[in-house]
Length: 59
Image: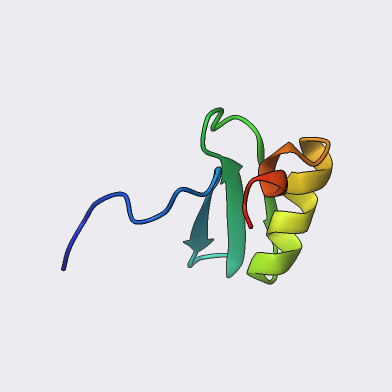
């Protein structure tokens, strides 16, 4: 397994295996986070919390 930074995205994704929820967090401020049943839902919620700043540079 290789570890490292493989993405220039401004967010991080994690799966909570106990609750089966995806968590998206701002890469620059880990206190800003959102959860969702899907990765897309978590990212959309995170994007709302950051006024579009997270996904603006994601594409």
